[in-house]
Image (cartoon, rainbow, N blue to C red; front, top):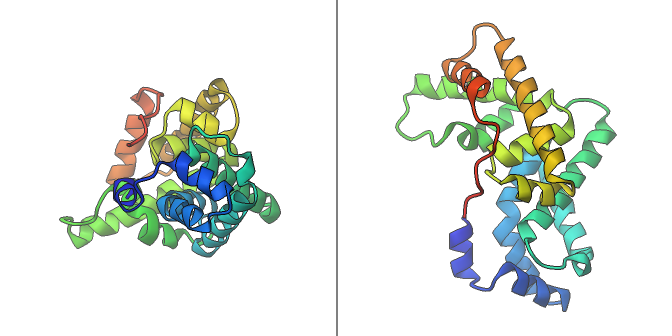
Length: 219
């Protein structure tokens, strides 16, 4: 997605942002096209509701446009995901509860991000994958919002500690702590589910022995 958009809009993020700061709306729209999927994906997994994710994504880009003068360069993706994370946390505070509704949406809209492409798997395997996504999402929904966001940025979006720290506006040490605690809680949740789908069981086992460092971000 990023590579394709870069071919369509060969200017760098910082150059597009600089032009947008000079009231060039087309340059800002190019940034929206470039980052609308990762922003929506993060909001969807944080809020577990497609409609809420759409609203949060829209508010993210509105806030970004209004606050673009505050962007000083470096990583537009980290900057925009930080705004998206703040939008999601505001929504969760308004709810006063954990987001456990609309879990089926994640099977259709984000299941491949968790389980990989569905092509080549049998209907039975796809059904198992759907249940796996539901179980994982319930575990994610039980995490505090900051831990959930850190785990998602590391394990789904593939960002480094340093990138997550920029996204969340905090220190690398705090990020490491949130990821470690979030993974531990998620692992305990998965292990407590009893008879788990096979891939969830393997995830629980893997999380118990995996190196805690997140994957590097994708180009």
